[in-house]
Amino acid sequence: YGPAPGYGPPPSGYPGFNPYAAPPPQRSSIARLVWILSILGVLLLGGCGVAVVFLVQSVSKNADAVNNFLRDVRNQQFGSAYSRLCPDVRAGEPAAAFVQSLQSARDRGHGVTSYDIRTVRTSSVNGFTTRTAGGSVTFSDGSSQVITFGLEKSGSGLCVATGYRLLT
Image 1 (tube, rainbow, N blue to C red):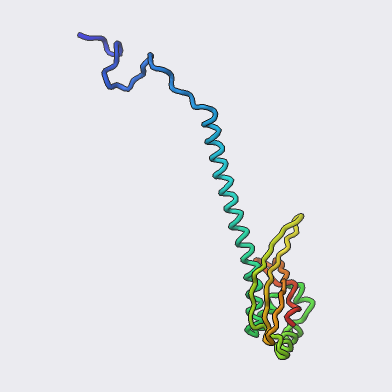
Image 2: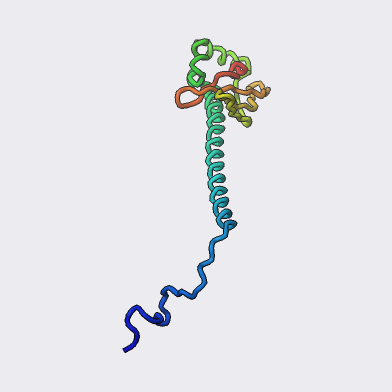
């Protein structure tokens, strides 16, 4: 008849429990530590990558704001350039006076012909953020000047707060 079911050795090739086998090896604490540190390292690198992306976007916004302002001045769209000034600057200087000063600068050979914005900075200290963008501005008389423009947040974008007076 053979042994009763459930008794005796299991059939060959049967992956059952072997009471005579050695216990499974325990994972060492060093291997566990390596896994934990690897995961933390990947998370840290990912966080740094995200921070760099946000920094690059912030820096490019600074340059874009100044490039747009200078493009308007170069193309003699003085009213549009005036609208890119910060509200507190516009409150202190009427549009007509701003346009007149840029037109007179152009008429005396001091109109903007080209610009190259290369220095861009955003810094935050004690909750106060300072944004600047600057570079070389070339005028119609052939002269050039390095100008740094101060920027402020206005609504969802940036506006020019300082540096624009050197164009007049």
